[in-house]
Image 1 (cartoon, rainbow, N blue to C red):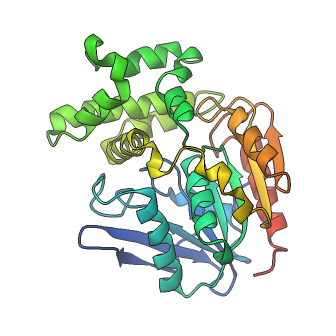
Image 2: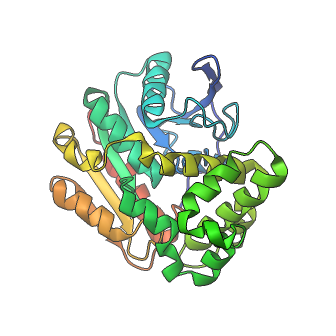
Length: 313
C-alpha cells in the first residue's frame, strides 16, 4: 500500500540552542502541499519507510527527529526537552523552510504533539490526521506503566523484573532514575527492557522485527529515557489541557484513526476526543492495535491523506 521508496530532496541539521540540533528532511514534490510528519515516542525518531506514506507527486513531506531523538543530537538528551520546546522547534522549522501552513500527520505521541502545536498555532495548520490518540493525562500514563500488563502479563513481568521489589510501587520513578544514570551498565539494560515491553504491546499480532529494533541501543535509549522523562513530568502540560483547548482548533478538518484493540493507547481516549470534537471524523478500525504499520490502520491513513489533497493550502 505504501508509495515506492524515496530519498529526501533536501535535509539538514537545524541548531535550536546551545545544546540541541534537530535533523530534518523533505521529500516528494518541492512545490507540493506541505505535510508535517510527527513521530511517536517521545524519543522514537522517523523511520525511512515513513516517507512512503505520502504521494510524492502531490505532497511536500517534511519529517524531523524531535529533540534527543533519532538523528538529532545529542541523542537521548532530556535537558531542555519539554513540550513547549518541541512546539517552538516546529515553528522554527516552519519558518526555516518558508512554509505558511501545513497539514499535520501524527500518531501516538505524535497525535499529542500535533494537538498541542495546533492549539498553540491554529493559523499555521490546514488540518490534522491523527492515529492512536494519547492525551497525556495521568490515567493514560498509569495505564502504560501498569494497565497494559492486564493484556500482556508476561511482558509486564519482564518489564518490572529489573526494578527491586521494594521500588516497584514507584515504578516510573525507579525507571527514570536508572535511565538518567550516566553509567551505560545501569541505563542500557533498563532502556532495552522498556523498549521490549512497549514493542510487545504495540500490535495485535506479534512483530518480530519490531521487537528486535526495540531492543537495540540506538532506539531503546532515547525512547525509554524520553518517554520516562515526559511521563514523570506529565508531558509538561496541565492535566486535561488538550481537551480543554479544543475550541481553538474545532474549525480545522480532522480525521482520527484508532485501532479497536490498541493496548498502548486504548480507544476510550480517542472516543473521548471525538466526543469533544464532533466536527472531526472518527474511524475505529476493527482487528487492529496501535501500530501504524498494521494493514487496517495503514489503509485508513492512506485514504485520509488522499482526501486531504483537497484541502486548501
